[in-house]
Image (tube, rainbow, N blue to C red):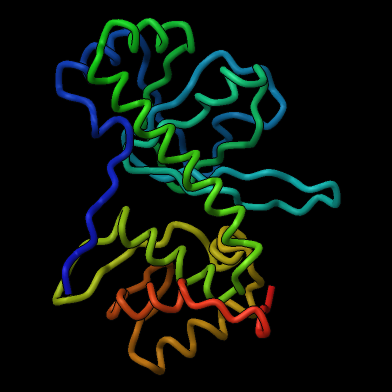
Length: 233
């Protein structure tokens, strides 16, 4: 089995000199586990470039339920769109474990992109990729069931963060089971049934916040298989 091609975040797409130049414009800060880096609705003046650690992007529904919208790490940039679009945070960013981040004001970041062509190209690539993924996710949620969405999420996490070991892909899972189910847009019960079935078939092994993907090709097939008669949202 070949390891999927990783998708690096913005920070890791920068050259060493561009990383140094951007670092000079901002400041590095560390956040403990469970810290709120930014809060939905507050004014936005700066963005975050994740150097290490995991962050979950969440929103709270009217009935008080927290919904996980995205998982960020591996050099991802967060908080950049709100500054351009609304001027206010569109979601809350909360750390999972310790996070180290570069914090840069929007004005400084814009100036940096204006004077660093390769960094600007990398940023446009990342933003375009994220917008494409958001559009695909909206369609996916309306044409797939919970198990398919979970399979697709595991494949995506493996592509981005999986490490090959003994012919399998090891994925450290920073989210709890509730968080993983929320991110996949399904219930915890549906997720548990799917994982149980995949374990029996030898597709995955699971542990505490850890999943070993043994057959990523079969998970990809499951994710792409549409059977609207058996949708289980």
